[in-house]
Image (spheres, rainbow, N blue to C red):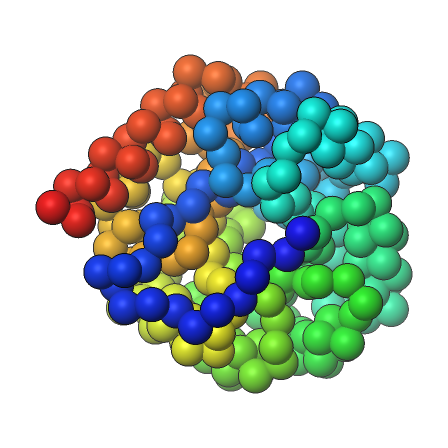
Length: 247
């Protein structure tokens, strides 16, 4: 159920920043849906930044959420695949997309072959979200290319969650340019990368359409179990910070 893409309103009329929560199981998916998440993202956190779940698990989570009447958009990652084999990337996109998700997320690292993979992904049957891996900064040429290819959404994320957050990896001015560039392309824009509640004011000031969270809503670290209380705290804090900014 891809989101309806409309021209972006001015900031004072812009909808709230929505919360994407990453889950690895049916129980976590239902918890996220009941706890106030706006997007459900399917991944295996212990297998890397965009670690992929088995297609059987992806399909089971989607079916469980839809059976419960959950109408939230659902995305799933394909795993941390390199750009040297575009055929393997496209094959995995097809497998994941066939599980009934609304969006298929594909990591785009700064490496040889990324431009060719982006072109191929734009022709994929399923709705693909390129996720720019920003540990070494954002590549302006790849960003310009993606913005011209008609993707429904584009994200920035980090691979090494122990090295810091997205805000440590990318200067604020570059993140602002990223958000503006994607929005000017009439696509949805998302930010992620070891984000926590103290980052909410900066995120809401940048005004992406959605921000991705896993670390902030888990016990111990992102590989631990999703925690209902932490999720409620995140949802409440996001609402309060947004209200303060709007006041």
